Image (cartoon, rainbow over all chains, first blue to last red; front, side, top):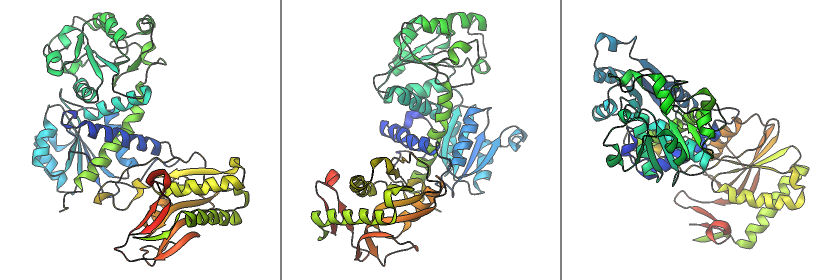
Length: 313
Length: 173
């Protein structure tokens, strides 16, 4: 049992077998997290640097916790307050850190493809924790894990991804993953936030009517409106967006069936989702966060195992 | 291939071991049994089956432990993961670890580490079906031994179980 890849750069490069292996491994780690001592000595000889060039709460804490639960040594790096602010290049920064004998790099960057660039130039294993508008593979994996836990399987399930598809790396990773695992995928939102080619590119459904999308799906993954990435107005106001595309309890109750509500966080309450829906019984938003640690432990564990197959130097 | 225990001998050995356990832990009142994943489970299942005929099933606390995350050879390659299921507290109780073959002792070392993360047992004992003597790399011995054998490194002990391998037998390859 081993991953077919040395890095986790995106779901795009993974085989269905890799995804299954990660999810199955995460199940075992989830059991570890229920124990009185929630820590195993597995990666005690591994050093991991968390390289965050972009803000993050959940992903960063989750990765850090996953590393600590595996007994790895961790270093945290944030772009602000480092020499990156003085103009040091990404490659120089990473090479300097690696010369201090670091085995793995967990990286978030606002430029799409930054981890792929690093993977070509450095020997350490790289985990993409989100790159620009490209991919956020561990989020897609934990989403899949949460769906599988809730509904028992991914195959044949109908998942609607709702909101700002255009600027969402979560959406892209989710689409790749769900398609590979045999789920049916729909994206829904205002036309200005859905890339025009997406239907043909991924062979998925596109819906512009929120209610129809909710009626079709088993699981609704509601995404955040990423105002920081929108450099031109794509809808007239947040209030108007909320009226047309905000998920709320009244809408969910009118469906005549119970669907699962997910959100990768951070939530803009009252914009893409109302509190009465986000905090309802149907929501598994906090379970997603809990599962994130187990899934990231699985990813780190499997990558540490696969990179060690190469002769150490 | 040489047979060490045939089906009948294996059944008698398992019966004897379960009686020996009861000798020291009458009624299993403060004692729990933990089988080691993956292959030790077949053996521990049989032991528990025997014990159920001697003591009230309500007294039997039986768990399964996977030690993969505690191995000292993670960097040499990954092993298949199995389920850990210990649905009771081991705090201040007697724990009997159960595995099929005791060889270098490294698996038991990892199991002890794993076990201590679940609490502080009063006492830990080890029940083994086949003890490969003189090949230990750590100072670990069994408290209950099915059969001791002398073997060289190139030989392999294989335990077959009906549930998985269609026959009950222990052989030396």
